[in-house]
Structures are given as structure tokens and as C-alpha cells.
Image: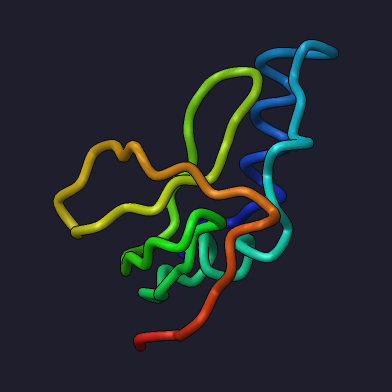
Length: 88
């Protein structure tokens, strides 16, 4: 299991005052931590399933990781994206 608060603490130590977590939508934190697959409806209407990952760097964003083997994703998650189903 991942720990969101440990991640935030580590990144604040790494980047100092430059670190900005404002783009991390709070609704995705539990799914980042527990690794459950969810179905998302993006603000533009598309639906996708996956797990939640997070970008690296001083201004991180949550990502929808489509498979267990994914190492990156072009699906960034924002406040206006909706969780519509918990898969497992």
C-alpha cells in the first residue's frame, strides 16, 4: 500500500517551497493508497478504468494507470473527473 502523506512529506523535503500539491484532487487519495481499480468518467465524457498513480516532480498530478504494467499515462485526473465505479 502507498501512503499519500509520506509521499507529500518526501516531496516537500525534496523540492521545498517550490512543491505544489494543489492539482492533486483529494477524491483520488484513497485509491492511490489502496491500489483498487476504479472507473472514471472524464469531464469530456470518456470513461476509462485503471488504478491511480502520481507524477513525479514539484507540481504532481494524479494519473489513471490503465494496466498493472503501465509506467506512465496520458490520463491526468482533476477535480471535475468523476469516480463512477470501484472495480475491486
